[in-house]
Amino acid sequence: MSYFLPHLHSGWHVDQAILSEQERLVVIRFGRDHDEECIKQDEVLYRIAEKVVNMAVIYLVDIDEVPDFNKMYELYDRTTIMFFYRNKHMMIDLGTGNNNKINWPLEDKQEMIDIIETIFRGARKGKGLVISPKDYSTRHRY
Image (tube, rainbow, N blue to C red):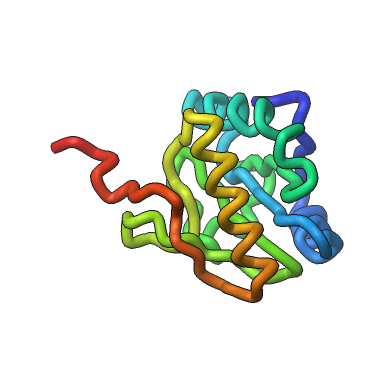
């Protein structure tokens, strides 16, 4: 759990965060604050927050505290990152088949910055789906 990134404590707060931001991307990490994967992800998000402040605002939501979106966004993974721009859900093709969210901890700061920048640039051009700068289809080695 990151104490340095803002937490949203109700469904209303999540909605307001998404609705009120008009110029930047809204990045929301859904998960359990005490989960090991969430802690790793929060650390990366905290470290990049200053670098992406002109492009994005980052929020954290504990899915146990705010269960309102669990079914709507299918938040069943340990950590999930979703992106919104001007009240629109932004999708990113990561090569995994799930274009709605990132549902694993991205531990590389530069990769996360690149993804946020790619989505931000695409969103400003009016695109609802952008292609990831890196293909994650071979992330798992079987």
